[in-house]
Length: 265
View 1 (cartoon, one colour):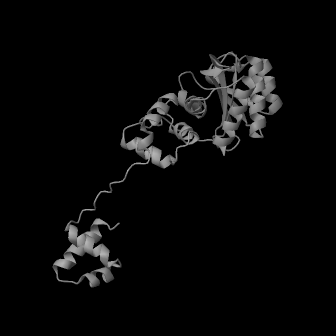
View 2: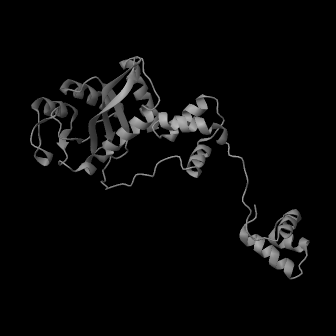
View 3: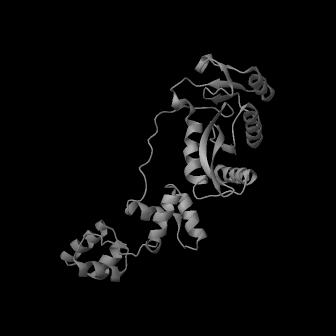
């Protein structure tokens, strides 16, 4: 499509008596294009009136947007699984034009890390459909701070033994151990103290020594310090868990690991 500047030039040259053939030669365009502009007598670029590919799926998009908790990646996956021939960019463009979606989250702070310097670990409760029933689970997550590589698993409860099992699996998944593991001030790891004054339970300190890392805790109220692991909980809830069901614990954690592989790739 010709730009507004090209259309303006065509009209000006025509007003000066320049032939259509010469206008086409000078601008490097076809004579039919010159004729269309002269017939329209307008420099403004006409708006394209195209049928939106996503329009036939409007109702499905609205329903899936609610079921998938606003995550358009999951909405697109479910649409394609249902036979829709629609690209992800076409879906997002449709949602932007029709006001379907949420405003982007503004970052509150910044921390920089070197490779292998730190893993952040935390847990968060989530509700899942497991074996045909809704139930609350404890989602344990670990994130490599430099690469933001993610690993998580779900447990019925999260006690000290569960923590050691999870961190062992996480470090094996990452193929290595960091210098330190950042936690909140959880009783699972903390013996007493908070922030820089935190003293870990001897059992957990010995566990860390076995892998060559130390547990550290962020100061109470300093949420930005653990943002690498806090943010993925929202991602897990609105992407991985949105619209998915699981037959049993093994199925849930197998799918979690597969999803981590996909996200990390």
